[in-house]
Amino acid sequence: MSRSRSAASPLLAFALSAALAACSPSGAPSGEANATPAAAEAAVPAAPAASEDARPFAIGTLQAVALRDGGITLPNDNKVFGVGRTPEEVAALLTAAGLPGDPLQVSLQPLLVRAGERVLLFDTGAGGSLGEGAGKLGAALAAAGVAPGEVTDIFISHYHGDHTGGLLDAQGGPAFPNATIHIAAAEWEHLRGLDPETARSSLIGDHAALVAAMTPKVATFAPGAELVPGVVKAVSTTGHTPGHAAYLIGSGADTLLYVGDTMHHHVVSVQKPEWPIGFDGDAVAGAASRGALLEQAAGSGQRVYAVHFPFPGLGRIERRGEGYAWAAE
Image (cartoon, rainbow, N blue to C red; front, side, top):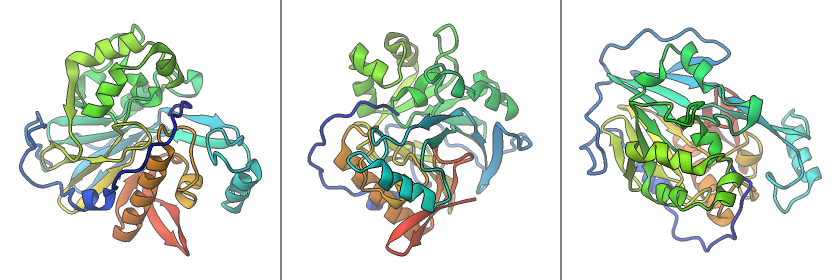
């Protein structure tokens, strides 16, 4: 998440629906993948008990845990949600859904998945970039029974500090010393090239330390790459950032789509995907990504994990009249 926003670029041909349709979790390893196949049926520790910080659930035979990192409160001022609209329009949408018209609450929950001997973490939360309201990933991992050194793979949806801040420990070193960090090649190139001011506006407090900690561990990938054979495949959802990636996670016919920041709010983003959002670097492409994802997910019944929807961020998109609605599990 970041309040920086560049001018919208012309939208190129957009084929998210086709990409998702092709994202079967089975198949041969991609040349980009540096992982060995994960045996989803292998014995894993018992699922942790549900708590306010960790909510276990299953993805087919895979064990998963929603990890509470915290939350963000944003004013209804049209600087983030409903850019170009009015506070009254946004408030009307919220109150019709039974929510306060101001402010807006946004959650933050990385995802943990066990796949055989591998421990997969999707995004790392805010670290210290959002103050006391977030940065609670360590407590959530402890509640899930996982030590940072046990994490084998980290999948970054995009570079913003509320998704990468948890990569650093309190001393500015790598918080997950044994993990490979998977990030889209375009996203990694963009992150490395940030100037200090843009990095700060993207919630990255120490850009040099972040890049230094990531560099020895980074494994970049191309759009659509299979990253853990039979378990994780990248889905390109550009617009929010240059190389933003969603991840299709699953075993067999049971899959979960981790959407990253393709959507931010469970009412505004779902019911008004065409409304610009101040966090998107390319407003046109961001709106197109949201619309395509909503159409595909509603049509297929795809199970979704939304990192910024109310905890635990797990549910489906349903058609409602001419539009869509979020149906939480």
